[in-house]
Length: 226
Image 1 (spheres, rainbow, N blue to C red):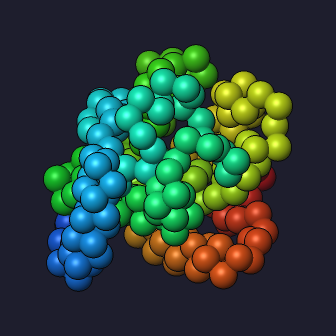
Image 2: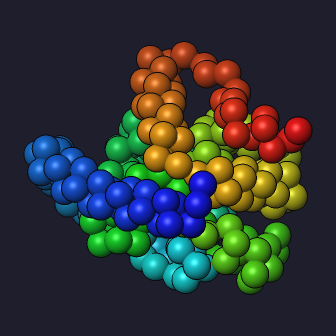
């Protein structure tokens, strides 16, 4: 894809991001209100705010619904399916992925996209990636979903089976995600984003139904191996 065509598609992508984010926020505003009210009644903060790495390796604040008591992140950055820190309603939000809904605010503000590399915590990735690696990893805006996070959609279940999940994440998962996200950025087009979005919706629906989903495969990854 030529640079001019690529830039035009990026403009379309980020414009559509904001339009659809606004529409989604308007449509699900009642759900936002109900979740916020429940969290308030539980004496919890409505939003969990955290500094993550964004486009070009620059930091930004990501928004999620609160799922764990304050200070829980001090006991580790990796969460698994067996993690005892989330409170009961928080587990429901995590299982249904509804804790991610406030990131629509990030999309509306221009710090995130619907599809892109997941925004990671800087100290979570500094051991595995240099500053230049981080910039290359985030050549595009981070997303609510993305090729790497979709490929490892079972990450919380996988890490629950590992004796040292932090070490495994740093030495096995992160390098693979780095390769996947860089390949995604190099192969990116609007149709690829549409494919990832529909695959994500499919995975979420199947997991809501309690069905396991096989490993996600991407044509652009298979081509990159040839």
